[in-house]
Length: 128
View (cartoon, helix red, strand yellow):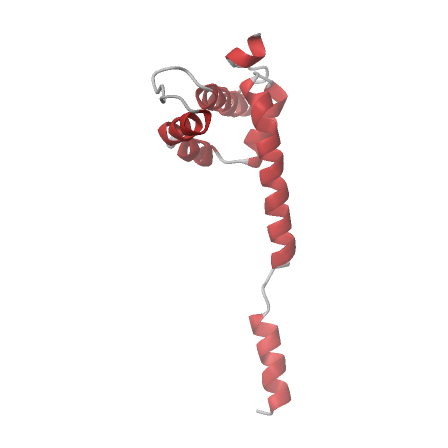
């Protein structure tokens, strides 16, 4: 096999299949930025923001994120200079409750023609 045919064989078999890796990375960054921008609206009880977030992110990822609740509370307390208060309801608790309710609502939408909209919580900051 000549060198030229070996190179063609390598190019044909080694090139990544599907999307360009750079474009894939840029799409992932854009998706994460959008998800991050939706979080404050989710804490305020915005159903449309919750639905969009659920479209962008799998429920298992939300569950895994919430599993680090105590870490988020501790880091926030360290940055703000107070003792962590784990028993109080925080923004991440409201975020998680609203997203779980929205996942359930979206699941019901597939089964029932007109499901009842979820009851979403609002953070204390947005109530003021």
